[in-house]
Image (tube, rainbow, N blue to C red; front, side):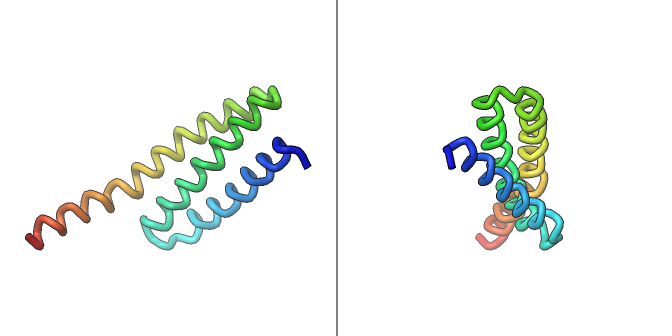
Length: 91
C-alpha cells in the first residue's frame, strides 16, 4: 500500500469518527472535538487530492475545511469564554 492510499484511508476513517462524534450529541465539547477531527480529515483529503490531481475533491474539502473551522469556533470558543468567566468569578 503506497502513502497516498494510506492518506486516503486515514482521511476516510477519521471522517467517519468525526461524523460519529458530531452526531452523538454529547455536548459542545464532544461536538467541537468532532469538528477538530473533521478538520484534520479535510486537510488530509485536500493534500491527497492535490497529489492525485483530483481538483473537485480538493475544492470540496477546502470548503468543508472552512465549515469545520467555523464548527470549532462555534462549539469550542464559547467553552473557552465561559471558562474565563468562571475563573474571574472565583477570584
